[in-house]
Length: 369
Image: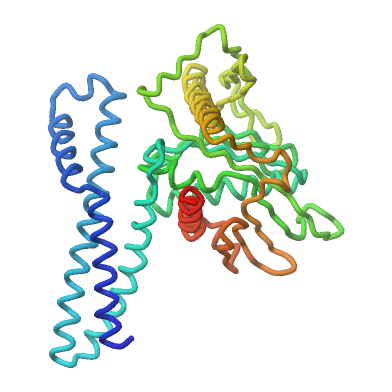
């Protein structure tokens, strides 16, 4: 890239980053960091463990966000100086180094720019995700398990913590469903574009005749509830069933009835949790999932009243959002944004940021239309 082009790229990145800094309101975040720092220093902080966890998590998230923006600004200033020196001294090596750094900054600033598009009511929250196998039998159950690994690998790539609440294993292979929580700022806003029906086309490893199989799995993404949501659930509205936790193939992993299933009688919503150690812990976790589903139900009802929109179709073909093709060619394509890649293995290993970014931009365009 020519020197003039590199200089122009720096100017464009400076404009992008300045816009991000304005939206991020760093001064307000620094003030909140100072306030949270005082709370963390209080000797009685851990008298209330739940509140202490929220305070420390919020502090860490804000610090990471501010440091990320400040770090990008510092790197952009440094590469600008490096490019000036390269021009003055006709230093080709320094110019090449500056070019590489500008490319890296472009990727990172563009990714951060996408974050500024997350302005929904619950976008800042952590996410509760449920994956379910749909049409396709054993291949669908296997596909659901592949998606579970894809999202947990995505979380690991970003150093996000996640907690699996429940996995219901299928008889032969794969899973019927799984529910887990991603603990990261803006996890809901980021992952909500992943909601919908995912479609897999491949030669079935479970078919002795080696025939091509199409299978489906559904992804549901909910915001994690907070105390301010006031999701009150009367005890009379819930039926509690306990059962024995089980692993793959029905193998018992718990000799006591510690798993819990909650049925919300007014809506018919059913949630379960079996991954915690005790029945009480599983009930608390299941209640958290139920509250998130009721919050989302209320949000959808409000949205339907305001916009008079219909919900997604009830069949596998009607609500497809992404197609994963492993045969006769290799491609993963988002059916809403047309974003596609030719390396499904990388996608299933958690490399889905391109799809997420494209989805967030597409959603904003749809909202603004």
